[in-house]
Length: 383
Ligand SMILES: Cc1cc2nc3c(=O)[nH]c(=O)nc-3n(C[C@H](O)[C@H](O)[C@H](O)COP(=O)(O)OP(=O)(O)OC[C@H]3O[C@@H](n4cnc5c(N)ncnc54)[C@H](O)[C@@H]3O)c2cc1C
Image (cartoon, rainbow, N blue to C red; front, side, top):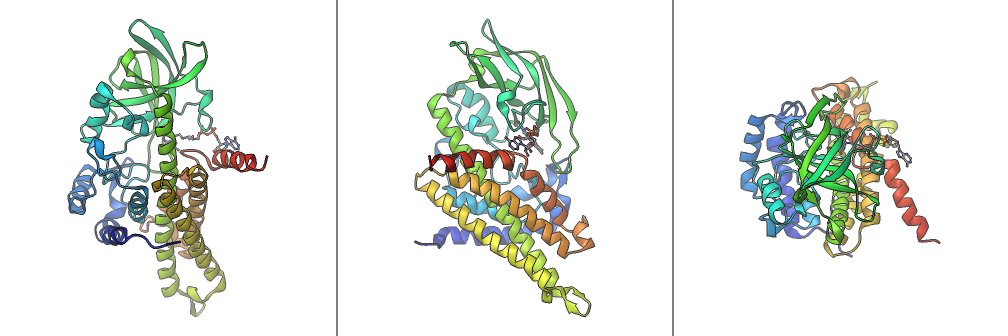
């Protein structure tokens, strides 16, 4: 077994660490407005990031990207997550946020929707969650009915990040197939289509301000229904796995930062005549964070290696997301406790790390639901 990162990835990790320390951390408390990067900051950071040569690092080569392997992607996600400079759900410094649905588009749909997103000309949103269907999307009520030359969509969506600035939405709706059974399909829908209305923008404890969207007799032409099939299912699974690894890698970055902040403060802050670092209750928190970070890194790097060698990583992907999101939240909480009142202050990044990591345990699959799916896989092995 070889636990060393390849030399080129060690170099990439160090380069990114220097970049985050020098360019992101010093400005991190002043980069967002309404949950998004301020345009001048985005321009500034993208300019600074250009020499790193990472643009489109996670986009396949046949689409003009660099097609980095998973291990390399994990390195990028982990290192950039040490800072709160970027929005936690759209950390698109080196690449626009592209869903597997978009990456899987072919022909005219690829030209119309994917390529402009990769060129930075169009923005999209991902509209699946509804008031009655979140963790369990099968309960969705939005429906697409067949009509001449297309479909008519009626329903509503909730919690849709970026809907207010999106040019088009990837809308999920129930649709009666030729066999008479309901299936969920994705439709590419331009946000200017008559019948689409934006509703409330929700104020949350995190910076993201997701939207409600209402669809009233929205016509979508036939060719904007995304047919998935087997290739689509494979792509969706690969994306889900990558998304879960991304949660794990981001959590590792957060824990690394929390450990650094907590140790620095504990070493210099004195109470009752001695540094906090000398107190066993504080040492307990530091040791737990360091151990859990080590566990998580082993999990994430191992899963990435397995992914790159073409193996099935469904089990590992579940573990990386659930363990990572849970332990990074606990690490942020310990770091906050060690800092006392300053831990709650907006002058330090801890309160934001704490809020963001708490929210990660709910989005992109609540931990309970992922554990349920993972436990079923474990139980099946003993049948
Ligand atoms: C900041 C933010 C951004 C988001 N962005 C988007 C977006 O862009 N597009 C989009 O489509 N959605 C988005 N979402 C929605 C997100 O994916 C849902 O909030 C998530 O899937 C949970 O759904 P829900 O909130 O309806 O919770 P519910 O489905 O009502 O579940 C509530 C809780 O019940 C528990 N639970 C559920 N099922 C089980 C079970 N089987 N066993 C045990 N416990 C269970 C879990 O603890 C869960 O947290 C976003 C949400 C947030 C907070």
